[in-house]
Length: 343
Image 1 (cartoon, rainbow, N blue to C red):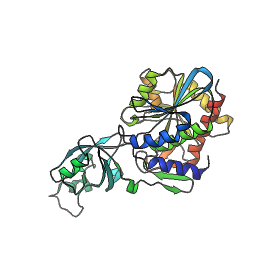
Image 2: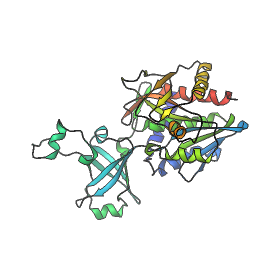
Image 3: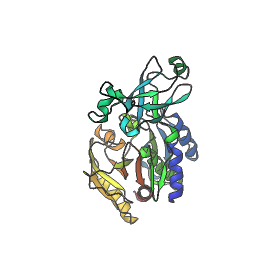
Image 4: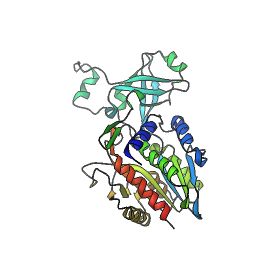
């Protein structure tokens, strides 16, 4: 896959809102793009496409979660200001003041994530936020300039999802890098779609799973892995770049050995390393913290015996993320080699 085509695919996916548990918009696009494989959607919201294997007695799953982080409406003030709580690892200071979308039952409305004025004295509670206190969701609100009745008419209520507005979601290109909100995990979905196009057959039965509600506990992957007997599960993910981790930016994919939820399978990791080596693709091994994937969570709860996590190094994770398009392509090529060669 060339970089231009990959950038366009990821861009199209990013522009589909998909906060955890309200993923209808991305679902419609994925079902259309996977139509040649007759995808199905299960009761947990996962979208599943199957590539038949030469050996149908074994099965492996490749997952890429389709949900994104955001917030959920907690209450609506009498003046129409909307108060929210976080959904997944979202922080208000990462988004900054600006346009957000409220996905109402009948209408999507835009509002402004607001923190209050700067030209204030100690008499205003926001004064402490300028230097002394971290900005939390309870300090923020969404200014809609609508009445509670108007919001109710749009179907905005406690539980309504909030995400970064499409007004500012369009990604940008930085040479061979893509930058934008929700590369986690729309870029991994692009890999999944490319696998669906590249592989009419695999070594073993292969399930391509666009998993639901990963950001709130890998709910979709846990349901899927409970319903299917799998010989392995590989989660596609972003991998955080940070000074504490010996992970390099660039074209080399990352294979995790451990995260917050536990260790990954050494045998499955070795198979991925071999597949990368057969294609002369550089790779990195890493142990990280503050992280979990469909793979580690499913393995921790005993749903799969073997799991791995393959990803691409990403700056500003859970924010305005930046990743090298070459690393995303190399994740794809590693999986193609692995799925064709595996016996």
